[in-house]
Length: 251
View 1 (tube, rainbow, N blue to C red):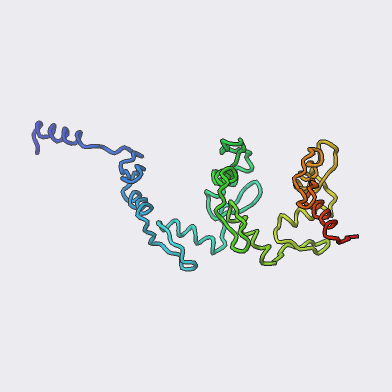
View 2: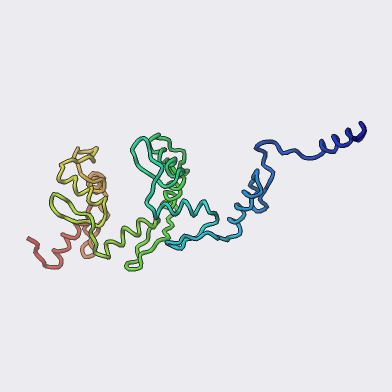
């Protein structure tokens, strides 16, 4: 049995040892300074900095730093979407993606552009928007050289060259390369013209048509004939005018 002095000495030594409180973060990453409560979590995190991706998908070969990331990725191949939105029923493979989606319904747009003030529900959407201000277009079409700020825009553009028109109108059979183009076309059949001119009240099915029309009121004529110098508000009007110089009579 230890004497009283020995017991006090032992208690003193125990008091000098660092005690880890519940939830206290004691493991720090040397690379980025992020803290963890468990050594295993730190070890898994450090794989990000090492570049090592030991977990590979058997179906597509994509590799990941962590087993959990691979497991989440495999849901894409399975088609399973366990996370559903209570508002609209849309389903997602990841809880984080659902959470970001729900911001749309909340109306909250916490990410604002410093240049124009436009707000977005997601940081990624803001980042893509800012590319328009920068003028940087990283995605180039190999066939015509046209550049785009987003990969999705390039992909949709390339359908023009492929000749594939996957979206058909049920009413008239006209086909389009993009779903958005079909949607705009269907407004013609509906008679709905949501875009109205503030100056004369004329309505249009597409925002682009309204924008072109408003050039008439502005007096701006950006389309100029190289042969005689006559200017027009619309490219189509210039094209028809040029037939005069060619000698072709369209009517």
